[in-house]
Image (cartoon, rainbow, N blue to C red; front, side, top):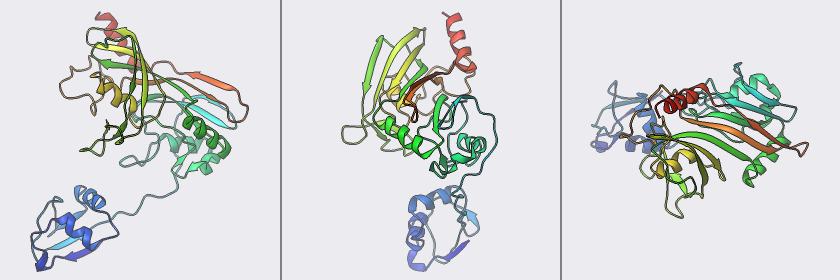
Length: 307
């Protein structure tokens, strides 16, 4: 706990700006997070980052200890599609975070995999053991993890060279007019919301390529198959939303005026249904498929019954 007193000459200064000058070891963004979490108190009460200080006020700053670098194993059920000495392929359920991050310290796929295969601890990052690619929390489907350093390096190289095949099944809002298409638009951080991604002008984002084809059309929704040539954060969600067809169930990119999804979805209508890669040890090309989860089967059944 750091305890500071505002000098009279700092009267009228914003709280976050004043703190960043006195606690240089903490970035202003980090301080704003602490303030928003109520870990900074002025005169004994929590205030906003924009609070204007008065001379003589007492400021208390509670800085939580950093998260442990090593991941703690957490036994949990895994839907294992394939496993050998080198790789592990799982079917991740919607609602499970792949690796620890802000607000998601426990209950991750990485911790469950570490409990299942403890030797994976030295592969990749300490808090992302074996993780070579990821799925969003509310997306389900296939992921491959590396169980050895050699397998990790080989799979990362395959992703970089775009030889890993990833196909998704998705239900989007609206009737997609084209039977098939390609979205080739750069993706980068949203200019006004650092939590979101967005299609950006050339030179402001990284190239992202998404291919899609229509499987079924309904009155207000379309069922698509989507494949990725690149693997940017939220790529499918951002690209489809940029076409005016956001993923059903997507509160982040779906906009506020979309009609509600007609059945409870409990996640995004987005599922990584097929995955193919070259086995890092044998050189054999492996292909895997994961059936649609119940949440998407219910949605499609309702849409079909409704015509």
